[in-house]
Amino acid sequence: MKNTFNLGLVALLIFSINLGAQHRGNYNEITDDISRQNILSSGNAKIYNPTAQHPIQNTLYPSNVLTVDVKALQNASATTYTAIFNVAQIGPSAEATNQLMKERIDSIKERLNEKGITQNSIVIDVISFTPMYEVEVTKKLFSKTYTEVPKGFELQQNIHIQFTKTNQFEAILEACAQSEVYNLVKVDYYIENIQEVYKNLQDELLKLIEEKKAYYEVLGFDMSDYNVAIADDKYCYFPKDFYRSYQAYNSISIEALDRQKGVTTAKKQTSYYYQPLTYETYDVVINASILEPVVQIGMHIKLAFTPKPKVKKETPTVETKIDHKYYVISPNGTIDVKELKTK
Image (cartoon, rainbow, N blue to C red; front, side, top):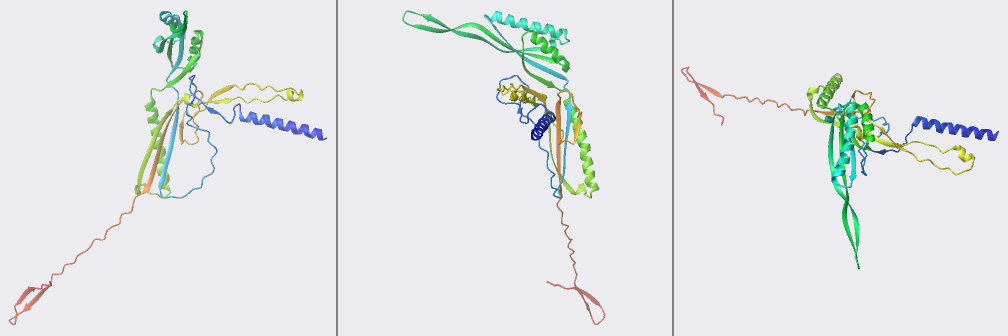
């Protein structure tokens, strides 16, 4: 009976572990922030949206300062993309190196032209063209001489390939791989109508600000009795800054424990996933549902309304001036008016 209970408990624990792993997903809780770039760099791209804990309910403190804080975000698909590949070629002479590079580039252009990407969408950027040396030893009767002599040349170029649809990228990778070009440096995203996007966000925020002000009016606040201060900001984030890495979850085999043999752990592969800005702190999100990596454009406006200082009304001073006069009546009945000097 005791063994049955222990087996049931072990099964329950295994089921709970598996269930927890399925609910959590195939990534560890501790991840490294990394940009999707094949470049040698110790630092990685900054993550602008770190994972936040669930906030605790805040305590409200009444104040006579009214605050309107609104944020808007728009997910915009790029109108054009530019993929950059690095190509390195060595050869015994400058002419031979340049010819070998030209043949590789021309083969890429021909394959891409068949896929609808013309030569006008391809630009070559020369990075370096340097000789390579090796040491030549000259033996003499009583000494040796070490001399550096050129033995070849190395040519490095970057290929900039512009395309308009994400499904063209697969054809670009295939064309480059067939010419033994594998070093993808980065993919840049461009938006032609970014000013229209900012204007759209601004209009949405202005509508929301008017709604907030009307809300305060309903509560009994006269907005004309307040001075206003403003702070605003806008920003644009690209997908390459939001790729994060993780290592896939894998468990130890239970069979190895039963057989009492040593356990060899498998190497965990490092994978990457796209983690865009989340929407918890935004009041307006345009194109919220996304399928592919997008450019995220945001705008933030904050208004602070403080009561105007009360102006004291001065009481006007009324000055009463009295003209003092006296009358002198003579015995014959005539009246003579005289002014009385008080000073």
